[in-house]
Structures are given as C-alpha cells and as structure tokens.
Image (cartoon, rainbow, N blue to C red; front, top):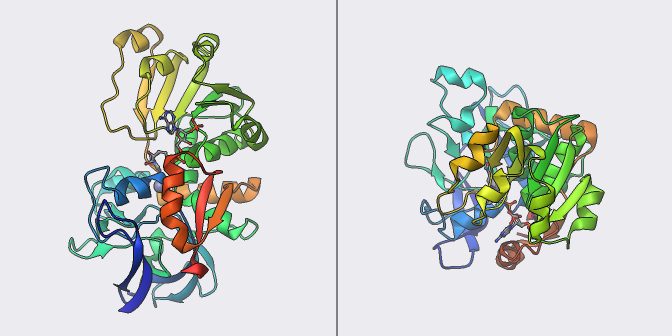
Length: 346
Ligand code: NAP
Ligand code: ZN
C-alpha cells in the first residue's frame, strides 16, 4: 500500500477538497503511474454532483490521465519506468467472456470504472486521476505518442476516444457529411478527428460565438441552432450526427437533418427520455443510436492516429485548487475547450 494525495468530492452538494487515501501495492501485472495531468470531463461533474444517481463518496474523479511510469510489476512486458502513458475511463473488465475478442469491452458487464466504481473484488473503491499516482493493470494502460504535447493528450483518453469510436463505426471519411452538435470538450475533438478522417464537417452550436475557432479546428461549416433557418437549410443533409449535448433538445428537428439511412448518435446523456416521432425516422430509414467511449485497442488506435495527424485537445491548464471554479465554468460552457489540471500544483 502507498499513500496517495488527491482531491475528492465527499458529498454531492459539497465542493471538492484535499483527500489522502491508499493505492494498492502493485501486483505482477500492474503499472505504477505518477500522474502529471488530469483532464476535467463533464461526466466528472455529473458524478461528483450526484446527477446520475450512482455516486459513491468519497469520490476522486478523473478519467483523462496522462503520466509517467515509475514502477512496473515483474510480469509487465509492454511498459518500462519513464514511459509516457495514459489511463482512460476504465481500469478492468470482464476477461471470461468470449465477446472480449470483439474489442467491445466497454459494453460488457464487469467493466470497472477508473473512479466511482469498485475493483473486481466488489468492495475496494476505485479512485481517479485528480491525484498524484495510480496503480493500473498493464492491459488498461495506453502509450502516449511522444510527439504530442503531454498535457494536451490527457483529454484524448475520454473526449478523444468518445468521438473517434462512433466516427469509425459509422465510417466517417471522404464523401461523408458529419455534424457535431455542441462545441465543448467532446465536440471540439470530434471536429478535429472527423476533419482528419476526411469527412465534410459541420458544427451545430447554440450560437456563432465559437465559429472562428470551429473553422480553425477543421469544421467546413458552422451553424447556430438558435436560428430556425438552420433546420430548414440543412434538412436531410447529414450521413451522421454526433450529439455531445446532455440537455433536452428538439430530437425530431435533429433527426430531420439526416439523409436516408443517416444516423443520429447520442454521446451526451440527457436526464429525461428522448422522444422521437416515428415520422421523423420511418420515411427515410433513419436511425438513432448511442455510443460510449471505446475499447482499449481502439483507444490505442485513436492515440496513434492523433500522433500521426498531430491532434491534441485545446486546453486551459489550471491549478488543482481551481477545480471547483473550473466545474462551474464547464457547466456554463465557459471553457476553451478542456480544462486540464497540472498535478504538480497538488
Ligand atoms: P461540455 O464541454 O460541457 O460540452 C457540452 C456542449 O454542449 C457545450 O459546450 C455546449 O456547446 C452544448 N450545450 C451545453 N448546454 C446546452 C444546452 N442547454 N442546449 C444545447 N447545447 C448545450 O461537456 P463534455 O465534457 O463535452 O461532455 C458532454 C456530455 O457527454 C456530458 O453529458 C458527458 O457526461 C457526456 N459524455 C459521454 C461520453 C460517452 O462515452 N458517451 C463520454 C464522455 C462524456 P455549444 O456552446 O457549442 O452549444
Ligand atoms: Zn469523460
């Protein structure tokens, strides 16, 4: 056991505060990581504030982790001391199930979240990246491309893979028209990744206030959803719409923007059901689907793709003690485009 320092939410209604806890001693297949940077995902806020009804306290959030290997177990073969590595949204999964070969472990029972979860023993809580160190099985540790800015790779571990996976699954590429709804932490990564894959990229944002940024990051078109003309002029025009918004939207209006056989994919998770009229789908064989992060194999593929295309997140670096203020700013969509905590300030 080793003592770790971090920041934790102790209750859904309280700000995060300094917290000391124990990390397990490394097993033969474990990697010990000194955490250097930790991204702030909107999911951290949903869980720390008890908005999903599944919160366990005390909770050390953080699943966009970039760090350096400081120790490896005797059976570890893929990593050595000094390597730049990442950890994303889960640190263990079902190993018994045959479906694991399909590289869809994020959808299988037995998934162990990086925080707000319990290890495979069912009793030991997992604590996340807002801390100075973490111990993770080597099969759940990712290699970070050396050419990328270290701090700005952290958000790839959640925001990056969450957009990369559906873009690949629904074959985004040349000749495909892709819309990204919401230019936030997830959305801005979607713009960069879809552009690098060769798709024609449109941002659908609440206003035009981030238009200049969106076009710079790779969007070909940028529209305000507050303008009713947007829904008229873009009717039946997209192969794929990735929605990163967790607020309630007029889902029929968004479905109407899909071409025949087009798909609207939910990435943000609205609290209430998503009502859609059959007439919004049936006459054009449209689909509505959802997608959650990506497998370890696909996450490594995404990181390698980002290395080749020089893609990182746009970040605002903060001190650890600014985390509560940062949470309030994310909720107000006042971040360009992901907060990353410099763990040296812990
Ligand atoms: P974020 O940085 O806050 O971005 C969300 C964006 O949604 C905002 O930037 C804003 O974009 C738009 N938005 C906010 N309020 C809105 C409203 N009332 N109406 C319409 N649009 C609104 O959050 P994030 O970190 O990208 O996460 C987005 C959601 O995805 C969260 O719910 C998170 O829990 C979820 N998530 C899902 C997965 C997954 O695997 N599926 C993974 C990570 C996160 P504009 O200002 O451009 O309109
Ligand atoms: Zn996340």
